Amino acid sequence: MKLRAVLIAWVVGMLCAPPSDARPVALIPARVVNVFTLDGSHVVLLRTGNEKLIPIWIGRNEAIAISLRLARRSPPRPLTHNLLESLLKELNATIVKVVIEDVRRNVYLGRIYLKQGRRSFSIDARPSDSITLAVGANAPIFIARSVVVKAGIEPKELKSRGKKPKSQKKVTTGETI
Image (cartoon, rainbow, N blue to C red; front, side, top):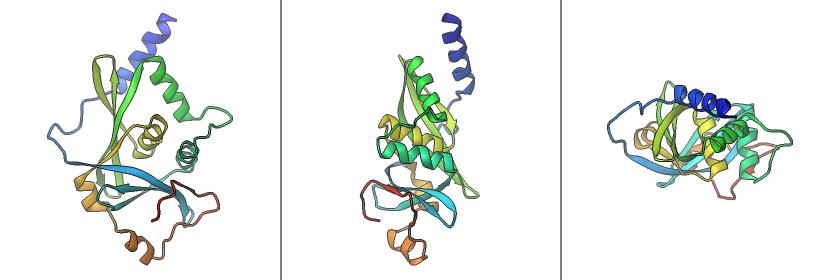
């Protein structure tokens, strides 16, 4: 049992890295408003405090995982994100926050900030995975102001592009887009 805990701690330690940028970054709180399918792709839609929308294209599995968490439902068998949550629980680590730090060539970069006892650390992570874990843990989601400037759109802009969210299996928080 001790070997298992040591091995898990070692794996997590190997995955951990200091923040990619030591300068303070202006962060804007965000929340998940919707997960939907658009032109055959899955999108998670975040709304920032200043009401900008941030659409992030994600994989089907992440869309399912986020949708289940928003609906407060559990899958019949554990998904990858459930495994990660179990590892965190076993290591007595909690998710403090999730940050979408940057967007480069239409690829979003994210980070999960964790606390384990007195130790605080962060892990580089895909925003889709970060958001999934944040929703499950009720952890706050933040987006760097620079990302909102680069990728944020107004709600009317989403509608005017003719890209109104449509899906047979749409999960929403009930907010109007």
